[in-house]
Length: 166
Image (cartoon, rainbow, N blue to C red; front, top):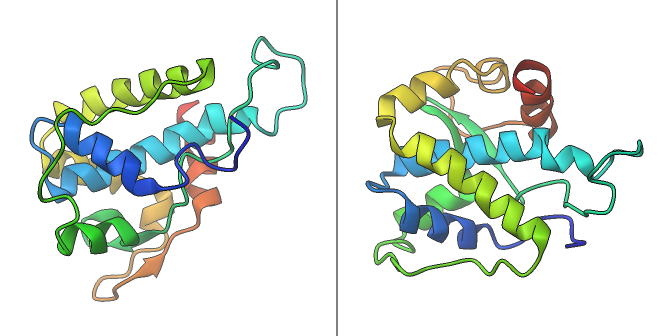
């Protein structure tokens, strides 16, 4: 793995979410995608720029999980491209057998990490996920009622997770 993103095509990850979640509503998919992005960036993504000696120095992880374009919407962070693709029906016929090739130790770790977060969000109802993401300053500081499509900063999302959760 030596790219900028684990999933340069984010829809591949979204299809994976649709195959893993029991009830992949738009809200659940969007909030899971956001949490995956934030936690990945705060953990594996930081290894990309870490220069100190660690047990991970022989592993190579991209800085970002996917090319994200999160916006602050009423019900929390929304990845605008994925929302558009969901609305146009790109994910209407999910492939239950969809898998992602684990062609390296790093990819195996990322999938295991993702599956862990997906299993947690799978057990939470949609509006509890909305409440959870409304706690994030990266969303709170940007959101303005009545205004649509307010861009969120990817770096701010990750930095908050580094400071608050890691």
